[in-house]
Image 1 (spheres, rainbow, N blue to C red):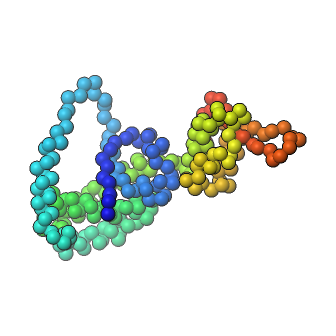
Image 2 (image 1 turned 135 degrees about the vertical axis):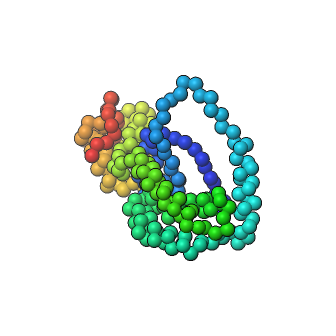
Image 3 (image 1 turned 90 degrees about the horizontal axis):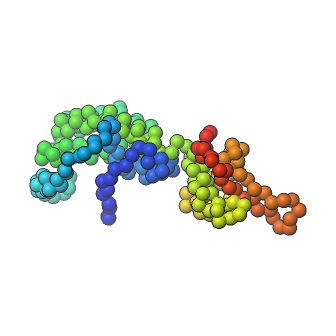
Length: 239
């Protein structure tokens, strides 16, 4: 099967635009391994130069190590297997089930254990590999906690942001604003619930963040309601 491996960086606040609540619950977000660190002082002049060539020999050694396992399987030592099962049942599985962002925690812990074994070029996974993974669990949970806080707070906020974006994009093209049908058509791929979408839109109107334009009564045909951003609006949604 084809796959892609990405290594990239971003800022916590940027995650609010890059990842939505839908991404968290659909399983897309937990396909990424997030690694956060403490905020560092910005350096005026940076002289650190990263040399990727230094990784070549270690990677070649790992490749040679992998050849020793023709079936692609690295076995567990009995003590290591028992320890992992205990950790899985008592802690790892409950944590995975507690949050959609941790939906692949079990897989991540096994990958870490395998990496520790590969670093030592072990024939079998030993107890030390499992202990090293166990020591990383607090950091992993803290990291995903930081990520979760910066993913869309609620689906209502996500819908409100989407509405505001649509009104900013298309509001100037229409004298009285954008119809709900235009917005829902443009956002069809997101599969928002129609009733929930209407409630968020009406909430923005009541909060004086969005202006609702209705044609004068007595005109022929079905009246078309349009929406436009109010100048100088604050946060898209609060509620």
